[in-house]
Amino acid sequence: MSYLFRNCLTVIEGKEQYADVLVKNDRIEKIDTSISSPQYAHENVDANGKILIPGAIDDQVHFREPGLTHKAEIATESRAAVAGGVTSFMEMPNTNPQSVTSEILEEKYQKAARVSPANYSFYLGATNNNIEEVLRVDKQNVCGVKVFMGSSTGNMLVDDRRTLEGIFSRCDHLIATHCETEEVVRRNTQRAIDTYGEDIPMNQHPIIRDVEACYSSSSLATSLAKQHGTRLHILHISTAKELELFTNEIPLTDKKITSEACVHHLWFDASQYDAMGSQIKCNPAIKEASNKAEILKAVLDDRIDVIATDHAPHTWEEKQNKYGKAPAGLPLVQHPVLMMLDFVNEGKMTLSQLTHKMSAAVADCFRLHDRGRMREGYYADLVLIDPASKHTVSPSNLFYKCGWSPLNGHTFSHTIESTFVNGQKVFDNGALTGVLAGERLRFN
Image 1: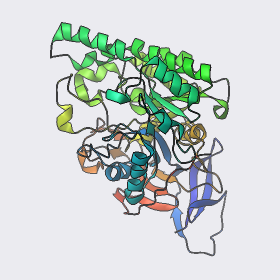
Image 2: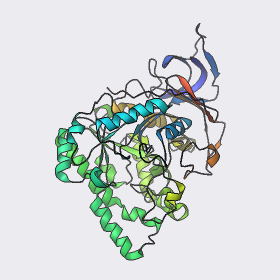
Image 3: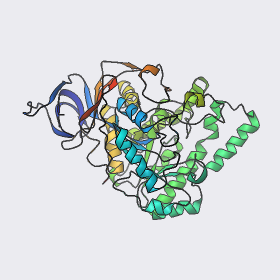
Image 4: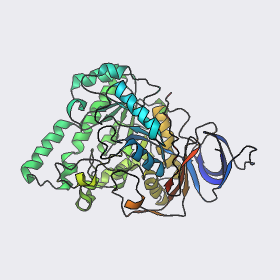
């Protein structure tokens, strides 16, 4: 199928402008101020007053398959993704079994090929004893290696200095890290138990998983990366203190150490724990509002390179447990583009900055092949947005298997009208089309 979008507001090489965009098969064929109707079959899309931008590339999601499918599945969450304008995702290895071998990883790729309307990639998980698996990862077909330097259990908690030295010194692929020092978290947890017993208030979460826990781990990761010349990507920065570890003085394509901000650390803050409780419990914790403001500044001045979701669904029943048993994580992959469009509407960022941080910069960071930009010859992963229509989040319009969202009741300033993956319409006017257009992501 081919499409001709007429008179849409888009972002081309960092500049907002109105243009016609012609999509032929899976690629952007032409972008111009005015395009004549082609001779081949196509659908005209009157985009007058609407926005057409590259689909978001989410470099951190947890889709829970295999083994945790009572919470989510690749099929359900990839559908939620395209409903929210996310056309590509990179999924994490802490499933059951854990994705710590090439064989297990390949099974996830095969499942996504059968069920996903969005493009996909999966991280290999590092453990304390799978260095040989880490070293044989196919760098053109796997997005990276995930190292849990905190907030994990068993063999996937890699916080031994000698093990980390081995991974950082020998792995020549991108290493993505969750950085929290478990020793600090355990100490703070014991202090909270001594004070509150089993009834720890949810507002203690950013005190238990505090700035020290994050900074001490992130600074260790950056130190190891500098020592060994490792390609390091630190996920979900949640503190202002950590920002001193990153630079905006060199282009992203030349950076060896990059970082990510997640939408919930830009949207929520610690003042909301009393009202929202475990709905906003996540690791690393949502912290005081001053951190949120500084993280946004760092996103806009390029110290932080990309925006993602860390989509991590749990059932509503699981979330109702007391602090010690309520799992950490928020379902978010259906709304990140709308969340940041609210920021655009409020003057906190521009549409150009949104598309850069959620699409182009992610493609640059991960060396993605021909994706993330409105550019002739690139894959037609596109999102058509109506700025004149509002969207209110409710259980009736969620595609998550868990069926709830911390954004329930919020009215967004824009609506995702249609989503296209590899030139095929996968979502349209509130409904999935049933087209499974997702492809395995390829990396340069």
